[in-house]
Image (tube, rainbow, N blue to C red):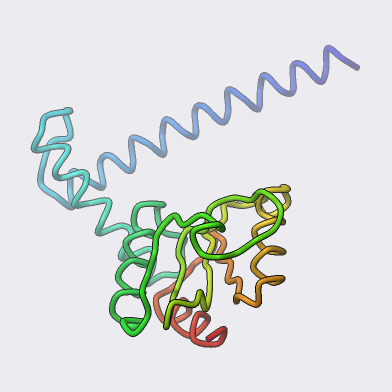
Length: 171
């Protein structure tokens, strides 16, 4: 049984590598066609890749696919500065700096402050990272300090309209 398992696992790994290679080639070809630049590692290719990535992120957002981590941060920066301009926005804020007390916890990705009081904290959480002590403590500390705790999963769609309406529902 062990030999069969090992052979099956090896076959799965080889299949995954083959699919990954073909998918990578197809994506490179698509990017080259979309940007008109040969992606050979030159600076212009890197610029074209960045432009294409931004285009893909915009298309992903419109299609309901998850955004890249960089695009997600840009989305939240833009949404918070434009839609919630009445609040002071802090990034990567520790609980202590926000007046939130309790067990040691992860820093909050964003905090919304009004009149010197923290109104809400936002966490951008990768898949399955909401089950660790640092996250649970951050959530409990916010709740115990009467601060709205808003979590967004980074592997989900997070369209702009959803982000805005969800934050508004907590404020």
